[in-house]
Image 1: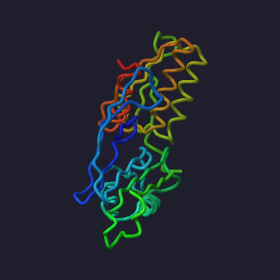
Image 2 (image 1 turned 60 degrees about the vertical axis):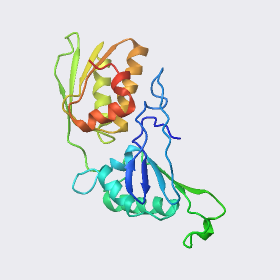
Image 3 (image 1 turned 180 degrees about the vertical axis):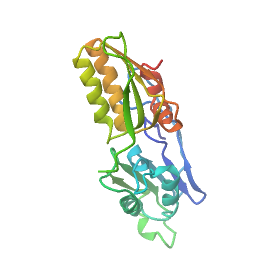
Amino acid sequence: VIAVGGHPLPLHISSEGVSRVGEHGPLLGGFSDVTWRDTTVDLEPGSILFAYTDGVTDAIGADGTRYGLQRLCDTLAGFRGRSATEVIQGLTVALSEFQIGAHADDTAALVLRRRRRWSSEHDEHDATAAGDLAIME
Amino acid sequence: MARPSNFEIRVQAAEAEPTLVLAVVGELDMNTVDLLAGEVDQHLAHGARSVKLDLGELGFMDSSGLRLLIELYDRSRREEWQLTLIPPRSPAATMVLRATGADEALPFE
């Protein structure tokens, strides 16, 4: 179950592609008398939930364009089947190659990946846990 | 640092007028947010008691720009001056305000 507090909508990365999940909600801690709505997201084995701040998509490239949502989705689509740590490492490299100068303000990301079933020949070492988590900040 | 954003602040009313209007043009992000904060500070220091920020020509705003708007609104209530905001027309800047609830929480006209 997720609730979004002012950040971009998280991305669900599965065998079917990359899609946004959840509903926009007010900035956490920014305003009084606000509420948030829960959204249930089904994470099938091997799929990933990617939560991030706007600094990721706001990164500026050499030609002055922003990294943007489409570029982020394309990058993440190439990480299907990777571990949470590998996704963070791969995105960090992609952002560093794209942007000029220092990181944009407020650049953070969290990857939560549900592991495959223990019988998967590619993922037998994952049998002891249901998922893995990695954070970029 | 990243490439400086295209940014401009146009003062549209003299300080003698009841409301000072600052038109914010371009991209309000980590590279430009201090320019706007400094401009508002300067006018407040010279006695402005009513400030209107016209964001109509704002093309882009990131979380540092949003943070400034929230800080200015909190400060206006604390120091008892009036802040009014004119909403942006660009989809990118509008999205930031809608996605964070700031379009309803901040004093937009």
